[in-house]
Image (cartoon, rainbow, N blue to C red; front, side):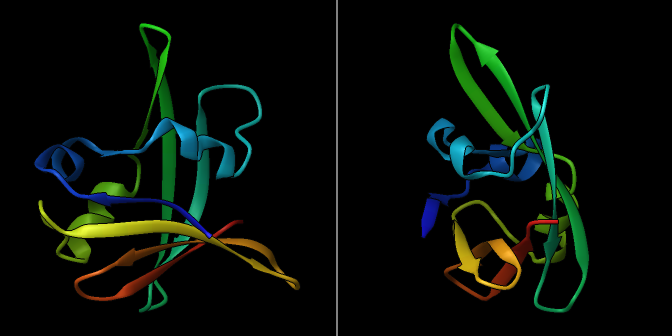
Amino acid sequence: MEIFSKKLTSIDIDKGLQVPDYSLAALPPSGSGNKVEFLVADIEGNAWNFACTTKTRNTLLKPVFSKGWYAFARHWGLRSGATIAFYMEIDQATGAQYKIKDYGIRKMSICNA
């Protein structure tokens, strides 16, 4: 199930991936606070620790993938103009797995851990 797709901007690459607020419900629970962390496994088997931080501005939620995202984007050569999709697959054995797909190049897995 696709959670969101997005054409990346220079802000997404340089300052953090701005995530649509409606996608928060599909992320792992954050407990108490405004930050949720989850592991990312790319196609090379590298593990990435992503964090989604949510700020409130004028009663609007502004979620951003920050921690781990910068290194991930650099490693994969993601640039402004690339289109990615963030989605979830349910595995009966392991539960929810989150994934990112770069429509131009390759697929990267995000695992709920």
